[in-house]
Image (cartoon, rainbow, N blue to C red; front, top):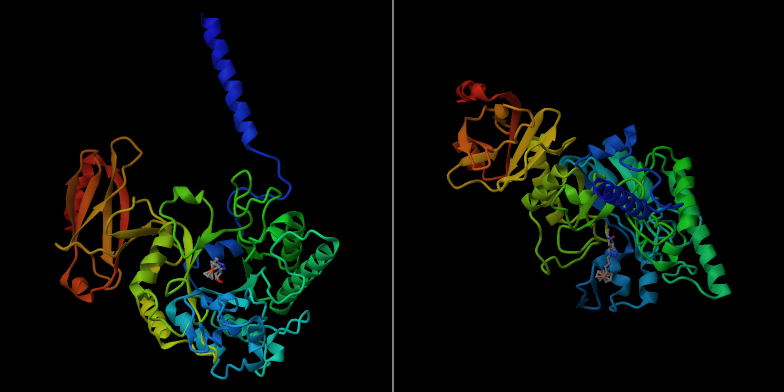
Length: 485
Ligand code: H79
């Protein structure tokens, strides 16, 4: 009998090993690293907390409207809206002369908002290049403006200490070799080869022209033609990294040999950070698989480029965006807010007002965002908590009506030990908080009550409490409480 049981156990073991082994497939073009990058460049990226995205190109000229008609489409997709002919669109660049453009002013505004990095559209799906690319005539060099906009942006943001990332669309509606579908005939294949060469040349050109750039933010890489080129794209990635040591590339650049994007066939993240969070945020750490990630967000609904009519959708407030930023950081991600300057090079007044609102809040409370990550606390209804070293930041978005904030501290993993709040203060007033025992629940979790003083209540805005937790022997709890109240 014993032998049979042993045999069954052994067989189960072999079977589960086999199924485990079956799950992992050898890949040539999957993730080339398991787990996070650990170098200084990526550590710097991880600590940004907040970034700015800029969508700017010739689509800013129509701004979602043409011949008296308004498109509800994303303004940067205007070429495909049906309101303009392709020919009309492809000639817009001849009038692109953004005389109000002042890169230094933009960079100052981004700095005031608290952005630590910027992602700038060097080329969107329409194929128009904001730099004077040698490889096409469809560039800024052939507009009345003439000057290299990418250079102006890189120089101005760099001077403000804001890291620059170059957005680059794989989709290119202007290049004759571009195809979304896998080329079939010999002539289609030959044409697609010209597009591959062109894309490679442009990327190497961007890295050579703007060595200060820290990374590339790819988009439009979901075409079946591009996915099919997994091996070639992988080698291109190697080439780009070799040309620019430390280069940061997200998961939206290449697919593995089975066409899997973002994560490969084995579920491992492709390249340096997860780029799936476009206009959406994760809710739990568990769904992130321990990977770095960013979330890019529009201020209206799905408008990235300039759209003249902002009455069409809800416009997020500074506090909406701050809440998303804190949430992203509480889940180990970066949050990036998009701006769509107009065809003249001006940032619209609504965006300026929103940037100012965010910047004013960040100037006081930024410690809860920069360099922080998920905290030891579990998610609680009042808001989000972040952590840096031994400091935990509680950012309160839902102020309780009775002005007593109930904070649940984690359970200690050590026997007879508990967590107590050793210190607590309001970040905006720098004043110590009154902390009282908040009792226990049925599971033995311990709560603390923090009184929200009148001066914080009056601010009528999200606020941050900085706390320091300490593990003590169960019996010492009373002594800590008295010291705090
Ligand atoms: O650059 C911004 C978008 O233009 C780009 N990514 C961000 C950063 C993006 N391209 N495609 N998508 C996002 C998703 C596809 C949306 C589409 Fe549509 C739905 C394309 C066609 C239908 C939105 C709605 C754009 C046109 C109509």
